[in-house]
Image (cartoon, rainbow, N blue to C red):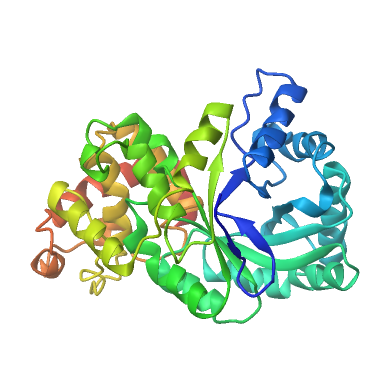
Length: 376
């Protein structure tokens, strides 16, 4: 297992992290909790969870598992959304509740959870959550304040440059990394630890290995290549994986033995993806300047699921609901239906994508999405 310092905290964390949202709830609590000890024995010392994970059982499972691991040998992270607390006192009490559920005296990395748009950052700063975390830190209940985000790279950079945090948790993987890479680089430049979640694109990579074989080097699968891309990446501190079985842990840990990637390796992978997936948006951002303020790169990233992985229209309608609430479209801007077919985006697209036709499809999905109607 490879270890590196988490930002400037002095904490040496494992390249592979244990994500606590993939437990198999058909199995007993003891069996699930034993996965933590198995992961620890394999060299993993970074464990991440949150209230609500796995039907709100994950923190309790962590508490059972931690009984078998020396407290000074691992680091635990959990989270709290600014929209889930009414004031500083409630936030403070919820931090203490997480501590009690996991049976620990303190939490190493506590995240302002799920900053999806800048108003969530403002709410955290002014709605009591951040002040509660500062109080908890002063009392020794938490050690480091971090944040998690689903924003694009520029939005992540704004939060990083606020100087309020010591680490960031981002959804980044081998397929979507160009869209969020500016945020990763900003965190690295400012000395924050960088934890990458969703390394397998929500399961799309292992489910579509036949279409993604070009990602892999000889002797490895596309899934292993995706893990290696993050684990061996010098800009990523921890690659966070959700584990259901010991085999999943073994697969992830094998990636930790890979040779570190160089910036040239990363650039080559980006080019390789572009050449092998001619219908995929690579998030170069050249179409960003839309006169109707349509977030075209975000929409095209979402459309990748249709173009590359063949998701149905029904699945894409559900995807629009998710992205407007939690994902790439959480920051309100112009809608796909606002497209006037001026052609500027298509003229600038390095992939020569049929963006106007795609936006028309997307507008139909959005029109069927109740969540979209609620947010407008």
